[in-house]
Amino acid sequence: MSTLYDVPGPRARRRATVLSGLVALVLLAAGYLLIYRPLAAQGQFTAAKWGSLVDPSNPNFVLLWKRLGVGLRNTVAAAGLAVVASLLLGTGLAVLRTRLRAQRQRRYPRLGATLAPVARGLTVLLDWLARAGVETIRGLPVVIAIFFVARSLPQFGLPLGDLAYIVIGLTVYNGVVIGEILRSGMMGLPRAQREAALALGLTEAQTIRLVLLPQAFRVMLPALVSQVVVVLKDTSIGGVVVGYDELLKVASLAVQVLHNPIQLLAVVAAMYLVLNYSLSRLATYLRDRVSARRAR
Amino acid sequence: MAIVFDRFDVFAGGLGITFQLCLLSAAGALLIGTVVAVLRLSPLAPLRAAGTAYVTVFRNIPLTVIFFFAAFGLPELGSGADFLRIPGLDAVFPRLGLDLPYFRFAIIALSVYTGAFVCEALRSGVNAVAPGQAEAARAIGLTFAQNLRFVILPQAWRFAVVPVGTVIIAMLKNSALAGFFGVIGDLSSAADTLTSQEGLPVIPVFAGISIGYLVLTVPLGILLDRVEHRRAAQQ
Image 1 (cartoon, each protein chain N blue to C red):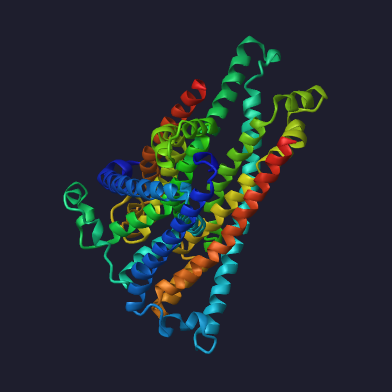
Image 2 (image 1 turned 180 degrees about the vertical axis):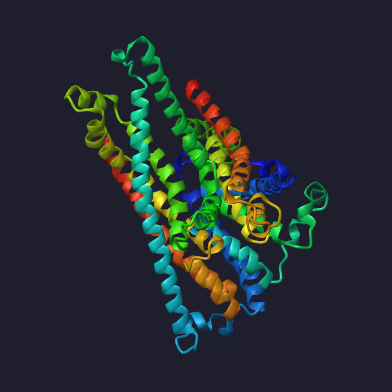
């Protein structure tokens, strides 16, 4: 935010350096006094608390990290499956809603004066239903989606297992979100794209498949990558709500044996942080590339 | 569907608790978000670094992990989050004053997590103010603090209303996790009690719980759409 203050001159720069140094000192002192000291006083930095995580000679070290590895793999597996399924569902929904919207323009001249209004009413109704469904699912918590998938499927004779419940729950919600991302990507394209494709003699379906959708994917790639971060974070709900053996669940089970919640959670948080931060950087990089291409 | 009407008190009570939780967490998140946003805009590098670190950490770890920290880490440190037992306020929100700390833990987890997103929404509002405004303010000799207070922030909050609202809607939905971390009687824990302990059929309970959340999220969403359209029409 360089527009908020002038480019500093030599005196302002000196003052800023001194102030920065002071502030940094104050922050460090606050961190030491308010965070490190109380934690140390409670014995949170002792080998008893950290040993199983950092000391290879600790009897629990190998087993703990093996379990955390399994948890991480399960997290990534659930997220990967959910992302692929959500992309498929989202693409389908985006195409469906774009076609319904286009269908509303049609007048059905061949159906005659009595049937044409019925056909038009039907498309309007379907369009409205699709929109209401999308808005409803977007307004519900993912937690509730996963919870009820896990509770209701066994009752309907479909005991598919924890992984399936999480993937289905995540897919229902994120599929709808991705569908909206892709749809707004298609709507954001210049109108001439669609008109030119139709003028060339492509059908409505071909126009979407060959012209609009590929461009929407490219424009919306950063938003889609950001959504992957959301999915990855939300897999941890599966551990709490369903009991799926993902990273956080593994950690919470280990805490019951090792009694070091703060240390284990810090390590698990760091693992999520590295994973998601890399993905966020990728999204930023893609966003910059897309906008650079636009500018040219 | 009769269940929704028979057990209306459970659903309505759940809605009430969820609403209280969200109101308090929203206040906390706005407070934290504003402070962090000011840090991130400050001319001093260490403060900016602290703000950026906060946002990076809390945007990239799952809310579930933060809930775990609150529900298992804080008791380990011997804290019952008693600073939230604010006298007077706990008369309005009786849950704040309970000896059982999980309601307060849920508020902390939701505020800390959502604060990072509020900060980014506020920052996007500041960035949306035309650069000429800040430049003109500097040209007439306003300092950084005056510039923020009299020129940038009064305009920025108008641009930030919709993004902040979107963040709050997301928080309303995220609050469903609270029921799985010891908060009793909110909408999500009502879902659990009604289906597992009382063994009621899943679909009607699901419908009732869904309506509860939609009552909170949909009107806010419609309101934000209105604001956004009006803003777009003005420009």
